Length: 173
Image (cartoon, rainbow, N blue to C red; front, side):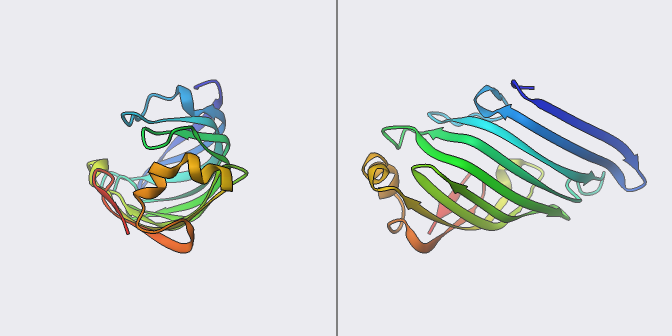
């Protein structure tokens, strides 16, 4: 799938459907699941996890890890691609709440660390965000990402940003 390998096992369970997955080098640039106008992503995604989906609560329980190599984003707000390098994340899912226990990037122009929750909604765009994150940039990247950094409420550094709102209407403070 998308130049990588995806293994998925689905099993009926008395509470719903149990899903185990394993991703190996799935190319983000080739996926067609989501599109943001003026933006794109590249890199290879790998990871594994288990989920339990039930008829009453689509995202009942689960956990997993994801890693990305060569992670790069383009945006109309940046004059050059944004290199995040290597990414690693660990998450849990419980009663429709996705908890990001750890998300870090390293080796790129921009370093990101994040944790928080996403309360999943029937319409994914209505999912509520409660995420805290920090950013730091390399000296060269700070000038290239000037427009993008200017829309943030404060310069990148140790003070965290707060991402709230919904996926359709996110807010950063």
